[in-house]
Structure formats: C-alpha cells, structure tokens
Image 1 (cartoon, rainbow, N blue to C red):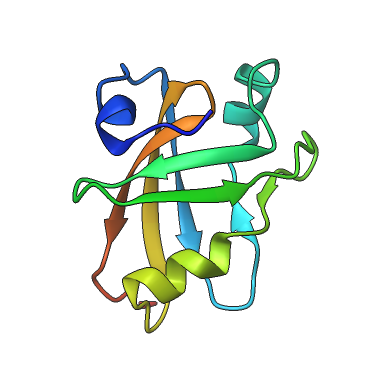
Image 2: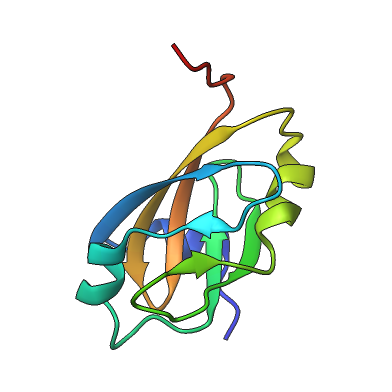
Length: 109
C-alpha cells in the first residue's frame, strides 16, 4: 500500500537512526534499529520529507550488515547532493519514515 506524506507525518515516532549519504556507497542502517524492528521492516520503505515529497527505497533485510540499496542514489539526485550529507530517519511503523535531510556540507576536521 502506498502512503501519502500526510499519512506518514501523522505516525508517532517509534525509533530513529541517522545515516549519511556518501557518494558511491550503499546507505548505512543502524544495526540496533534493525534488530529492534526486524519483525516488521519490509524490503520496501516509504520516506516522506517535510515538504511533502515521498520516496521509495529498498532495504536488504540483513541483520549483520543492514543497508539501503536501491533508491539511495535517487535521493542524491532529487535533493541535489554535491557531497556527503546526513539524513535522519524517524520510524513510524509500517516501514514508513519521516526524513530530515541536512543540506549543509560535511567537512572532516
């Protein structure tokens, strides 16, 4: 079932993790998060941002090395990433997430 941004935003946050978009790599998913919600996380995740945009990404369902695979590079194109960027994932259940994309450039110090 496809969810709208409004429906996703109305879900209460049940868990969260932060990932970083690094060009050429799959998306990191926090292992503790995947273990906690392993019984309900589907391969297909629906993401919604505060502007009402909805995206679909695909999770590998691997508890030892959890990653976001397909759809990850689409986020880069959509948001116009020019380097590495952090994304906060707030889980509302039903494999739906509210996301916050941090557009500032990340520098190593």
